[in-house]
Length: 400
Image 1 (cartoon, rainbow, N blue to C red):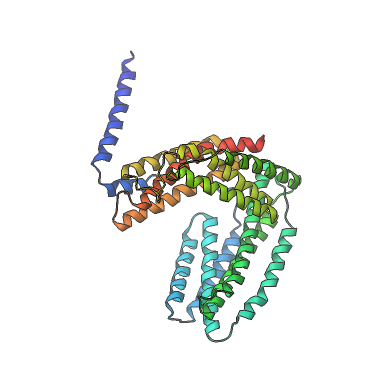
Image 2: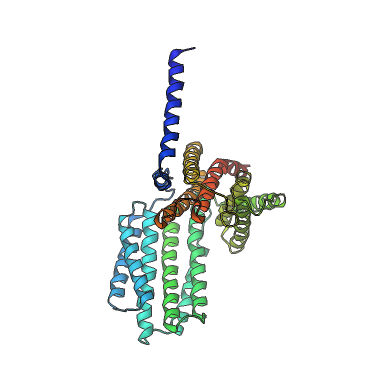
């Protein structure tokens, strides 16, 4: 046998053994801290941000926060909102991802408007009727933008992604508008707070519509109209997802059972969105549900973090994160530039980041073994691993 090969195998074994020994000699806290140090690969943004859109959003947040600060209210809830707005504005200025920066700026504006509206309502300068009078104009603007929807792009997959993002903004605007009306009918909240939160909801509508307008005018490209293709794809994938649900059943103490219910909810949401005219967004929901359904068998032995008290160690969590990141790296590489694969992989990325936040919560609480947070983090890491491995199977369904 080649002596170099023998030495290479021996060296690899020694390195692996040293890693195992190191992990065994670390405390649970140190292992969890090491878990958070495992870098998550960056999935590129598939839609470029216009600098002026972000700049306008940040400037608006700054102006509204300055107005909110001038109210000088001592109400605990209002002070909490104001401090949160300031923190989000700070994040929006330092965040490297422009879309995350935009989200934080938008949220800061919503909270600042809530503070301003509360002060005005307390002084009798703003009423429920004033809020209600604004709603029809926003509803009309949403409908106008819906009529401007295009279903084109350089290719089918890019068209789905771009159109889905426009629809996501419009869907969010509709939901916030509905919430504004619902908030005004709440009985367990003071009149001033109802008015304040309803006005905050309308500010969220404004932000979402600005994003939709940007995407419509700056991103959607000329090309073949794909609307009829979208309808056919949605109906075909919806039928496929529903048929797969029929033969799926898992023990209620497994995370597969929870994920199965999550897939069912995405299928229902897809149907609702499709019926409201959001065809591309419905396709994304159905594809996400299909990847979850593909991932179920790998989750059948993962305990439900709430239903069971199965012991999950710090090292279990570390190894699960390591596998998730490795799977995501491989999936990004295997996507080979396929934009829709990368778009769907953001769901796996989200599971990993949510799990990271749960690990941090356990560390901050001073509890380093078998907490509910760690059990859920472990399950999410495993799901992200399986999700990343199954994305391309669903992409093939789309193409078929």
